[in-house]
Image (tube, rainbow, N blue to C red):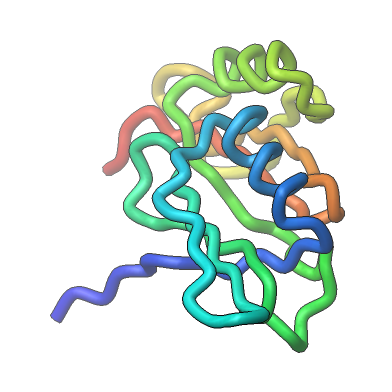
Length: 134
C-alpha cells in the first residue's frame, strides 16, 4: 500500500498576506480559496511540481499559533537557481549552506546544499538540492 503526504496545514495570522507570499513570492499555485461555512476559509496552494500542498486559512487550525511550524522542506534540482529566483521575488533567504551529508559524485551541493527562509508569520522553510535520487 502506498501512503502519500498530500496536505500540510500552515498556521498564519493573515490569510491574504500569506496567500500573496506563497503565490507571488514563492510561485505556489492557488488550487482553491473557499469559504465552505461561515468563519472558515480554506486556501490550498501547491509548490510547482509537488504532489503535496499547503493549506492556510481561518477556522482551520485553531490550536496552532501562527509561525509554529519549523523545518518545512522543499527540494529542488538546482539550489543556486532556486535561490536566485527567490531573491528576485523579494524573499529574504539565507546564503547557500553546505551541511554534512552523504557525498555526491557530481555537484557538491547535491544532498548537502540548503537555503532557509521564513514566511511572514515565522513558519520556517528549508530548500535542499537533490538533482537525482538513488
